[in-house]
Each structure stands twice: as C-alpha cells, then as structure tokens.
Image (cartoon, rainbow, N blue to C red):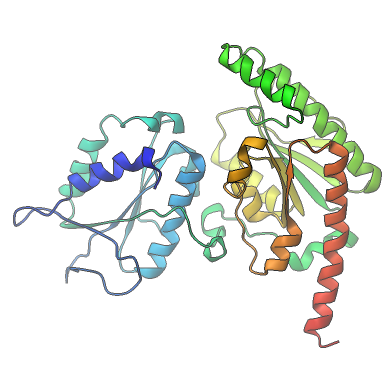
Length: 361
C-alpha cells in the first residue's frame, strides 16, 4: 500500500489489537491460501479490504484484491472501504461496501469520523476481523476484470473478423489535465503557468492545443484506413462549449461528475475497441484491461513509470508485445497514425499464422 494511505491501515490495526478476553481479535490474512491462523469455529469474521488512497490507480489495484480473497477464503464475507470514484466497480460477491463520499484528493488527510465509524461497525458487530494487505502489485492476467466492470474483454479471436466484416473501432482516452505536449518548450510553458497560478485560466487553451493533435491523428488514420470508427471518451471541462475534435471523431466525453452508468458505457466502448490511445495518466487502466490493444503516450518524466497506467492482461506474451505499444509524447500525429495502421494490419497476420500452427498446417 502506498505510504500516504498507510495511516488508515495503522488506524484500523490500532483498533483491532487483541487485548482483554471478550474484546475483538484482529488478524492479517495469511500471505498464502490455506488454513486461516487462529480461526473461530463459529461465525467467522469478515475480511476488511481498505481501498483508500489519493491515487486512483492505487485504489483500483487495492480493490482487485477482492477477487483473491473471494477465491482463497470463500467462507469469509468481504467488507470493502472505497472512495466514491470506484464504488461502481465493487464486485457482486462483496458482502458490504462502505463508501467514503469524498474526492480522491481528500484522502491525503485523515477522514473525519472514520475512526468512530470503524469502532461502531467492527468492534460492536464482530469478534474477529481479518485485515487485507491490499496488495497493489500482482499478475494482472489472474484478474477477472469483468467481475468489476461487468464487461467482457475484447475477444482477440474477433480481431481480424471485425476488420473484414464490420467497422474496426479506435478509442481516444482524453483528459484536459493530461496533455499531449510534444516539445520541451510546451511542457516548460505549461508547468510555468501552473506555478504562477494560471493553470485553470489557461486550461481551455491547452485543451484546444491538444485537440488539434488528435484532429490531425484522426485525419492521418483516415487517410490510410478510411473505414475506421474513431470515438473519444473521458472528462471534459464544459458541455456548453465543447472543444471540437473534428468531424471524424465521435465525441463521448462528459463533464464531472461521471455517473456509474456513464462509466459502464465507456467500459463497453473499450471492450469494442481494437485499440485505445491516450497519454500516460489519462486513465488508461480500465481501457487497457478491456480493449484488444493500446498505444500509451509517455511524457519524458514518466519513462520510469511507463507500466503504471496500463493493465497487461494478455496471457500470450507475443500478443502483449504486438498489441501493447509505448511512444514518447514527442511523437507526431503522423507517427502515431502509422503505428496504428501497422498494428491493425500486422496483428491479423500473426493470428492467421497462429491458427495454422494450431491446426497442424
């Protein structure tokens, strides 16, 4: 768990230390599946999974632990504590969901009233509580993302079929605070304006600046693949004066707050997409988990963290290599378009060869 969120774990541990007879007993889950340490013969207590972290990706990774606990300890009910941003992702097999109705940024500091709530809910109701370690590093291939999104991942067997028998789909994942800035002077100017307190006043300018690049990208893609469907999703600043992405792009962006229904509609769009394209930090975790492939544009200061905004979900390492690509944000729209075309045309060749090998030809 991230250091910034560790205070919550410490808080719960302090309130679940074994003390006098008759007081609550709190234990950490064993690191491996199997017999529980100090199990109670009757009425086993719940697993408490804390998913509170100011980083969206960390909170999401913590929530994915619910599947592991459900599989390893099916006899134990699960209680998850989540920020409202990911409450819609809680799987059906979770017994209770405690929603902290605060933005993620508010989790930088202790949550008022949380201590008393934990004491009321846990100490009064259960004699034993198992505290999840809430791991954020694990093999993504073992996660059933459909448990959380209620959407099945793109079926790779349909990758080439959808190219020949229907319209292939690409999805741009956009945020106006995660920008496709190609040049050093752009990044320097953008950071300088933020430090001067002019970030919000110039936000719309930079959003338009980015939109020009995506319009060019759409144009270059359609030059080579005119039948491709292009859809943009993500958070935008204003519905009243939306920033135009061009006639070639179907705009599904929305303003905040984003409803669970809208989140699920976006997930359905990802799962229909051969490729999702976005800048690192623009919310690429669920898109990369559900789409067939991705192109992640990396700013220079994120090279060391290149894999933190994606979910490598393919079992076959060749599939992951061919369908998971990274480019620096210095790449031009034409270069990104060329890579898109290459991925859409070359992966079907690999699929055809793979089918021949499996058929013994």
